[in-house]
Image (cartoon, rainbow, N blue to C red; front, side, top):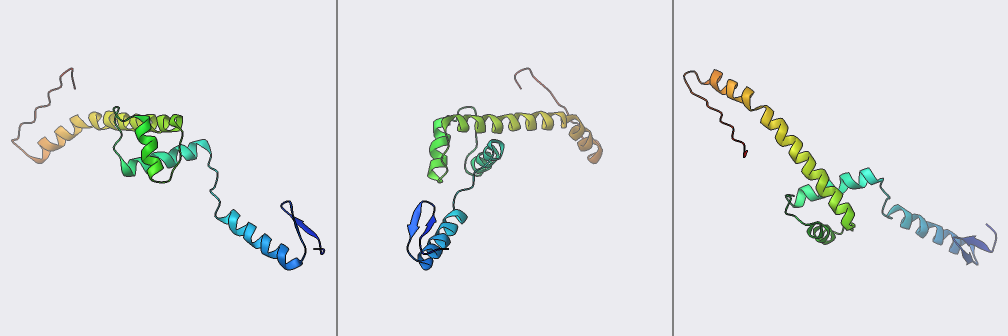
Length: 126
């Protein structure tokens, strides 16, 4: 470097000043928040939400935004909405999978408990 070095739009008189600025700039870059892809960001938001709240249809997106802000995560209302949809979609899929296992569970229960009566009754409002 010459006696007049330019780094990030700044002019330094000595090599030591330029080196110190470069070191500080590198430290700032190391701790800068990393940009995430949209799907990665959604997965991150969903993971944080699952740790702190049980999402139901009644939970408002503004509540999600405020909760995440409380944990130093800034999200837009639209991002909160997509995270809510992702969580509820997974929950519904999981319920369907578990519901399909019910007959197998009843058969296993009968096999493990000879003489027991197992009755599964399904109603339209289930």
